[in-house]
Amino acid sequence: MMNPQILIVGAGPTGLALAYSLARQGVPFRIIDKSAGTGTASRALAVHARILEQYEQLGLAERNIKRGHPILSLDISDGKEVRATVKFHDLGKGLSPFPFILSLPQDEHEEILVDELRKIGVEVEWNTTLVSFEDKGKSVNVVLQQQGQPVERAEFAYVCGCDGAGSMVRKGLGLEFPGGTYKQLFFVADIETEKPADAMEKMDMYMDDDGFMLFMSVRNAKTKRILGIVPEDLNERTDLQYSEISDYIENKIRVTAAKVNWFSTYRVHNRVTEQFAKGRIFILGDAAHLHSPAGGQGMNTGIGDAINLAWKLAAVIQGKGSSRILNTYEKERIVFARRLIATTDTAFKTIINQKLRGTLLRQYFVPYVLPSIFKFSFSQKNAFKILSQIHINYRSSPLSKGKAGKVYGGMRLPWIETASGDNFEPLRSVDWQIHIYGKAKPELIDFARSQSLELHEFAWEAKMKDAGFKQDALYLIRPDGHVGLASEKQWLRVLKAYLEAYGIVAFGVE
Ligand SMILES: Cc1cc2nc3c(=O)[nH]c(=O)nc-3n(C[C@H](O)[C@H](O)[C@H](O)COP(=O)(O)OP(=O)(O)OC[C@H]3O[C@@H](n4cnc5c(N)ncnc54)[C@H](O)[C@@H]3O)c2cc1C
Image (cartoon, rainbow, N blue to C red; front, side, top):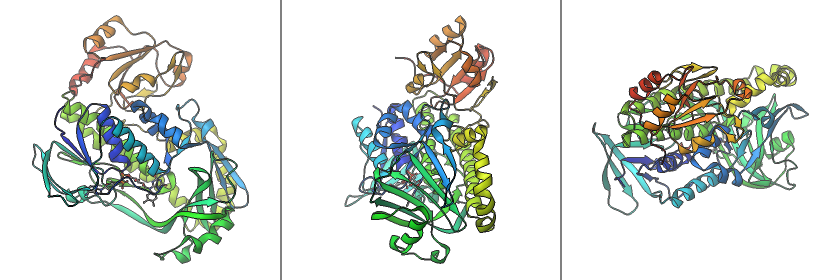
């Protein structure tokens, strides 16, 4: 085993996902966190389909799904009646093996990741703080401080700042964190109800002229998470208690709290830092971007950053890819974060805009516009794709080349069920692989074998065309399940040029 060349700073969901993904790919690292252990509050609840797909590649999906519970639909009401229902389950069917939102409190999610890391011999170094760092060009020098211990000086090839919203790594790099802070005050409450919920697998959204709330079951049928905006007259309060807004909440959504487990108020930011990487230092997760909690996208985007960076670091450290691959981390993820912020910001402003509130929102948007948006299956399907992050693509990345059928370089590999399983099963190797939907030519089979590059042939079926594939085209899939190269013909020349441009060597079938 090599000495660790990577330091992961922060063991929140982002740092832990990066750690697990690197470990699965055989890359040594150290992971430190200044706290004494995993977080205790439930915080981010929603784990979306794209993350579950990537967890499935790493062997993490099953345990997380078992621990949480799937949310299959969303009812939107104005306090009087349900105006629209979005059925994630129906919308996502055929698009992802996980057509739901997984409700899993962040503390339980983090515990699972720490335990799975322990099972493969990796311990988080708790009570250990990154105090300072300096990029020397060929390596990064760091100073670490453990409680009651003398300071430790160490050298790493790469430092990954997964150190949350107040990131000292981002600040140490002198990066600005442009964006804004919404003037509304948000609250989050985990309450226990007297009666258990009839249906744990649905969530509710309440919208009216005087408010907005989202609520769903969490942990068990008696515990509910409520997220919403504090009434305007209490906006400046810093010490607000649940009891002060319990009437407001309970009148609107008719939920009565027998016990309050957790209550917190906070300001919501939407920010994306100027750069996600500088020299040998990367920043990921909340350290790089902050979102409104309404879409449940923040934590998912951090885990997505980690998965994107992990295979690139693995390739470079193991000499299986040119260091230029690392530049694509920022290119791919900053574009996504900016686009996401723009989408969630628009959605959020629509909900809270003063002009809409009381007039359009109540009289027009909720009763008429909303139901019609969700009436058309086209927009419903799109809503699922956006929320679940399966629509994510890296089309403008230098690693993305070509198009065959409707599938292009940078796209998430469309999911299809096949006679013997599905086309995601081979992705569990977390390695480059060729997919042919149809028949592979002997020259391609020979070339793939000579390069130890996995080749998977799926017998052509009509539904593959519906998913966007072209019969007999060549798709080169990246270790994270995105299409790198799509070529209408099985041209070796095109494939070789792609592999050579990035010095890509497959890990090889054992
Ligand atoms: C009250 C609340 C409610 C939320 N609700 C939602 C929600 O409903 N949906 C949603 O998507 N998101 C929600 N979030 C946001 C979500 O919790 C974050 O997006 C998520 O935790 C980000 O993960 P991360 O790993 O990037 O950062 P963090 O979870 O912040 O982890 C960063 C880690 O780095 C460590 N660290 C910091 N500095 C150092 C240092 N110098 N040295 C060593 N370690 C360091 C910290 O101790 C911490 O453990 C909520 C957050 C809060 C606070």
